[in-house]
Image (cartoon, rainbow, N blue to C red; front, top):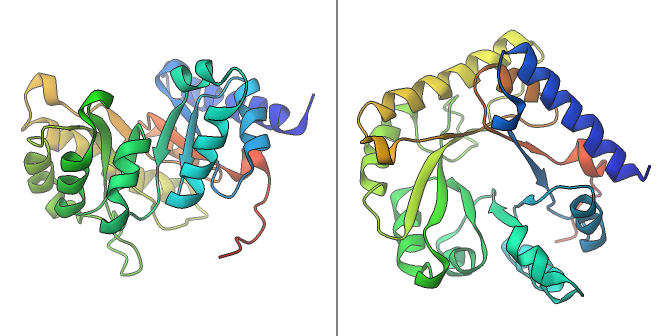
Length: 242
């Protein structure tokens, strides 16, 4: 079995076991392959192994790869099936490109970014799915809404016409203890539930984007619906040449 295919099988087994340990249906949890800095050949290997959702951090690199994959023989099927997620920091001058090329944005960290994405989303593509990035540990080095700001932001963003607010995303501080990992993810889960109390049924948030290679089990135990995995699928990343 090729390496990437084998890695995907191993990660999928981890996700399934973590779900069962938490008395959850494994089908509730999406495996998002973090493909930043990876080649189109690596992405094609993951597609051939059954993955359809890919996360990118760098705008220009991502749109180039999307274009290359769309030009390959049989790409019509890929365009129908693939979902591209922008998961990195998003600058105001890059919102148009993201609005035109992605299905999801996980890293909306201020109202201005959401407004620009809504204004620049082509109508024929339908609403852009977004998550609000929450700085769950109030780290100075990380962007995102504070827990106290998130409800107000959600109530404003839910009204924007070309977006669909789906949920929350967080990258907690790295913790060696699984119990401490769970505490951060539980906080995000509780925050989503609090926001949902203020939303109509049709607007309720259904997504928790949390958990990566090193802590996906803890995230799934606390209700994650989407785990973002790069290293354990594609292997260790070479340093990016900027």
